[in-house]
Amino acid sequence: MPASGVSAAAIAARLSAVGLFTRVEEHDRHTTVEAEVPESLSADLWREVLEAVAEADRFGLLATSLNGRTLWAAVRKAALTTGDVRGPSHQR
Image (cartoon, rainbow, N blue to C red; front, side, top):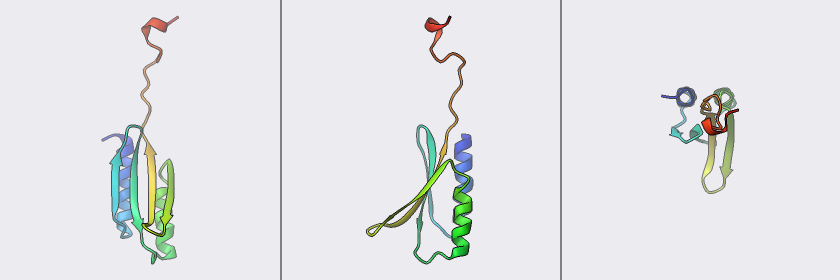
């Protein structure tokens, strides 16, 4: 599992520990964690949730009147390093 997957899994575990149902998805450039946030989440639990998602590269909260509140966090995958990325035909 890539490092981004490990970090995302750790974030998901922390969110699950406070009672949130989480989804983890792999994408080309990042791994995301999403969780539905109930209206009744206490201030102490919010603090724990924010500490967990602070480990991600980006995070946010999508709130709509139709779908409630969805917390998301994204962890970037490391870029591959290959030396000269222009290829052998462009080397000096």
